[in-house]
Image (cartoon, rainbow, N blue to C red; front, side, top):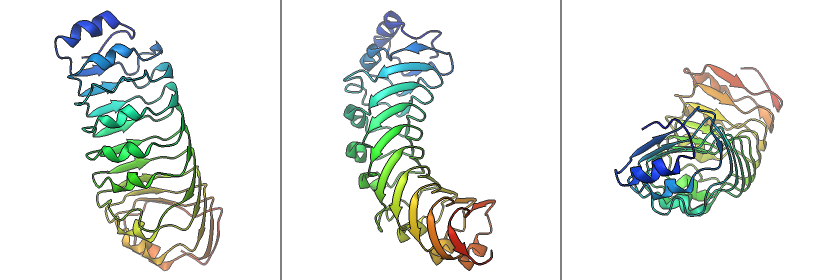
Length: 252
């Protein structure tokens, strides 16, 4: 059900009795804070509040009684504060997007509770700290977008061992360091890879040639050295390639 205006708490309260399952208020220039009464809609499976001008923190406890939610889209607002830990009680979530807000603090480790999650988008926020390894235990993930934050630290060598379905990975525009994990090249269905503008180093592994489904490969603006691996020629699906602003040599 698409609502004409936000803040209609009486309307939402009435629909609690009717078992309202979907709330869509996207793209209607709504302002103010997210109404806490949404947390009473215990039958809710979809909530889309994207493309508005929502502000403030997510109301405390709003996710405590929403066990059936599968889709949550709060993108393109001005929501601030930390990502609430209660969100990770919604363990039927398949799609989660908090893209382009002002969330801060760490990415909570409890994200590992979202065991059926397909799409995770936390890009364009003010998130800090290391990327929790628990994200990479979610074997159901098809898409991970954490770009344009302030995340730092090394990517562990085994980080991508359990992500056989990963098709989209955006970790660009952070402060990540170390080498590209060799486990990344086990993601055989990966199509889009963005690691631009970090502090990654070392050589570009020859195993990049294993990513035969890759269409976009962006690693510009890092500290990679050595020769451009000839294995890139194996990437016959490749459409866009960015190796710029590194210390690479050789020819493609």
